[in-house]
Length: 221
Image: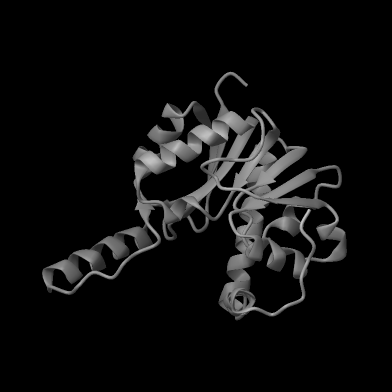
């Protein structure tokens, strides 16, 4: 397990900046609420892998279940250091951290009850890469996976697509993107192709926001 650090790096300052302001606090509250609903739908799993855990935003929610064993992995040791540094002692003692990528998880097959993945898929535009990650999730979880991402079929996705069309029409140079909207029918097909069935989903703001959390279960589990 990695030891916490108290150094205030630029990365840590970036994390703190994003957690300021009323709108941000409301967003964090809703994120936590969606996580609780998803964990409930997944049967309140006892052994959970948070991947990528980032700054540990969801650790307090995961730790609300007194008997839950929590593994947390991230490709960056620096992010894991920050997560531990800003977590309470009680929460930190519940978490076992390790460095790992979602494409190659350093765990054996059927190692956990649930993979909790809240901050990854909206950064992935390529369907083949999403499928590779889902295949790895299928290998490592013995029951469920919780996956969040941006989907279409809502006002914000429509506005985003409209602005992109206008930019192209006006000849503006497109800026590099690191967040992507995926069609609901497309991602749900990818879930099924990877061997998962959809238990349910929860939207951040139904009909308005792009953020959706899916609860998946391995077929036959």
